Structure formats: C-alpha cells, structure tokens
Image (cartoon, rainbow, N blue to C red; front, top):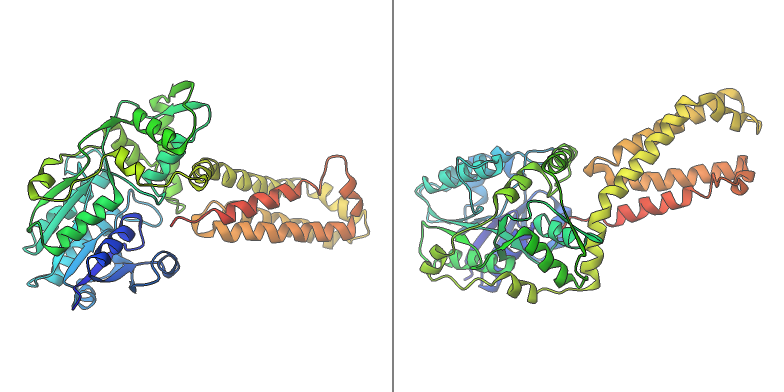
Length: 432
C-alpha cells in the first residue's frame, strides 16, 4: 500500500517538484493550495484540498491530515502584501499543524531557507526561523531543510529575476555584484525532501541544501546569460544603493496590489547579504550529492522559449504601466476637456445631454480600467475590458465620425496598437 503524503503549497515552484519526486518514490500525494485554477493547470493528476492555510484551524488540520503519514510544507511568502501575511503563513499555520498532529507518528518535512535566524535583517527570515522553532519544539517527527537560491526550469521568483537580469540588453546592470551566492537545483531539493519523507536519513535534524561551490551575483548573471545563449555584455553598471532602495519600495507597494515581485525589499536585503549555506550537515547525513550550478543548468533546456520569457519578464511591468497611464490620462483628459470632447459629438448632431453623458461615462470607464489594470487580481479582466471598450469606441466613432480614420494625427488608428498591447499583456500573465 502506498504511503500517503500531503504537500502544502503543492502547485508552487518548489511544491510541484516535491509532489513529482514523492510520486516517483511511491507516495500517494494530496496537494493543499488556494487556487483551483492553478492546481488544475499545474498538477491535474493528484487529489486536492483547497484551503487558505492561514485560515485553517488546528481542529480543521486534524481532520485534513488524519490519514497523512508525511506532511511536506512547501508553502511560503517573501513579504507581507495583499495576498500574503508572513506571520500567518510561516508561524500560525505551523503552530496549528503541530497542535493537530500532537501525539501522532506523522513526519513533517519543513522547507525553510538557508540563513534564517531571529536576528536576521528581514522579516521573511525572522518569521521562517520562528516557524522552524515552533516545529522543532513540538515533539513531532520533524525535519527542517534549508535550501539556498533554488534554480529550476520553471521561471518563478528568484529564477525569473535571474533570467531577466541575464537578458538585460547591452549593459550588465548589477545589484550587489559582489554578494556571494550559492544555488541548489529544484530537482535536487525535491529529491532531498523525498529522501527525508522516506525516513532514510533519520529524524529531527536541520540541514542546509547547497552546492559546494559559490559565485558572486555578477558571476551568476553572466553564467545565466551564457546559458541563454546571449553574447557577453560590453559594459557594466552597478546601480547605486538609493536606486535599489527605490526599486524595493516600489516593489513593496506593488505587493499590496497583489504583485509578488522578486525585487521586494526583503529579497534585495537578502541578496545584499549573500545567499549561502553549509553543505556539510547534508553530506554527513548521507544525502544524495547536490549538483553545482553548472551541472544544474546543463540539465535544463536553453531554448527560444527561455529567451522569450526572459525578455518579456523585463518589459511586462513597463507594458502594464504604459497601459495604465494611457487609460488614466485618456479618462482624465476627457473630464478636463469636457466641452471640446462634447463638441466632437454635437457637431455630428448628437444632443448636448447625450454627448455629455457619453463623454463623462466613457472617461469614468477609462479611469476604472486604467486603475484596475494595476491590481494583479484584475489585470487580465481590465485588459480584456480595454480591448472591448476600444472596439466599442471605434465602432461608435466609425458611425458618427468616420472621417477621423483619415485624420493626419491617426486618432482612430492609434487605438489599434493599444489594443494589441492589452492583448499581449493578457496572454503573458501566467505565474505558474
């Protein structure tokens, strides 16, 4: 009979790899996650429990985990935001799970992060450390694995940032270029989780998961650029700390709009301090050898899809910002220049009242779409709304003012590129 395993955060970058590694070793896996859409897209072949782990009580966990022989916690968040609460995810959920499993033989494998401590400079590391401590004090059959920077075929978080940094045109734009970085392949991490789940390595231990070698962040981005097949940069530019700080604050603000940017302050502070770990504990336990960065990249495809993603990842925030600015300004100009906008319609025989209603209503819709596209939850819907409204404007404009198609300033023609930009953004928003 197959052993049963429950994986929290199962459709995530690390969680997906863990599910597949556990399945290869004969486990029957149940995933826990929030999004039915993401689950169906990433891992349609396993059983699912759909919950927000921050809202699950100890008694609910007891029912959910009643038959689990192994629980793997692959959930986590980088920083507080509209979609994430670090204390709830990293601490409260662990405390409730420990309470639910008290007195059982269930093994809990916690995926933490190398470098966590109560004195760490970021609330991510501090909350992770507190969650680890709760588990280690629980009396359960626990194992804590602490990976360094995780590299894999799926572009998400840090690996997406590395691809984008490597694809930056002409200039190697560097953040903390001398920061020391170690990596681990996501498949190696998942295999380590599966080994721990099987009990081969013992119980109640903490181990960093890291390659033996290390490199600076500047060397890391050059390695990724070579892997992508781009020619080397001819110039380098180290971004000043004030510019990096502004980028972090902007990313933090976007976090409250639902965006999980790898440029959040916590990520930048972690990068500045370096991402390292000690491989000796894992080796002494007899765990399988972990590949170097070069070996990891050799096992990953470097294709046109990789290069396209890296470039798109760079321009996607600019595209969304451009759409937002275009529609907000369009709505604002309509309200500010209400008289002139009305005149375009009244000159074609439209009544003054109807013209005013059309201009004011259209301006408000433009403003709603321009603001809505900034919220991650509504970005795709706003893009589709932009496309529909644009064609509505073009249709009505063609009936009332067909001569504007021949306007030398391209009043109607210029709408078409904006439609295409909205379409492209709506198609490349997938996170997983």
